[in-house]
Length: 396
Image (cartoon, rainbow, N blue to C red):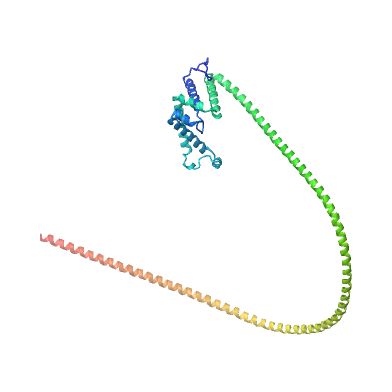
């Protein structure tokens, strides 16, 4: 048997299962090489010429394969990416009409097997596809083929290696893998820290440069605005001083005239208020006398009203006592009446109970009499039948 690279290996596989596994891998690699000539998700270039060359049946099979691949890719695409595809004019607008994922998966598997069988049975189709496909297998297919070749080599090595060698290689591989993984983790962590530190440093530098530039612009703006403000302030100050001086002189003259006028008015109001004050003082004395007489009259009336209230309070107390006595008397009468009514009610209940007992006894006696009379009638009838029976026997 050939080795994983296609050359005759001096160490042949003697295990039938191992030979079968390698045969399956070889067949898989052969089928994948055939399928690598079929362009994924699209027709081949110059499809019309290809269709005339291989026939409509073959082109229909390939068209069905392309359609199934497109549908499978569409149902596997996330919803937000589907919306982007539809916005760009691609994809399937009516995706509800498509089969579900499991159905598409089964159909695509079956179609792929049909295409593979067709290419194996007709090598000319594969050659024609290889000629028309200028770009050759896709990158993913090349990587997949290389992976299968590596898998064949690793499988062949593993199948042709003893258990001890396999264990030693596995331990060595695990140790190397652990070291490599640890080194990779350390490298990734350092790269991440360097990237973070670099980004942070760049942000700080950018922020400082922006701050410096902004402060410079603000400084220039402040300088220019300060000079303009100083000039404007000097001009405004001079104009304001002149206007204030003129206004002060004019206002001072007007205030002096107003002061003289207000001084004269104050003297006139003082004389007038003095006369008014004398009249108000006289009215005050008069009103004080009237208030004193009204207070005396009020005190007398209040004493008389107080005496009347005291007399009325005595009358009220006497009538309140009488009312309390009458209320107690009526409450006593109501209690006695309620007790009498309770006694009467009990007597009525007793009479009703006795009447019910008498009625029950009367009804029971009547029933007993009926039963006794019925029994006597039945006994008499039985005696009559017995007498007739004896008389008949004597005649015989």
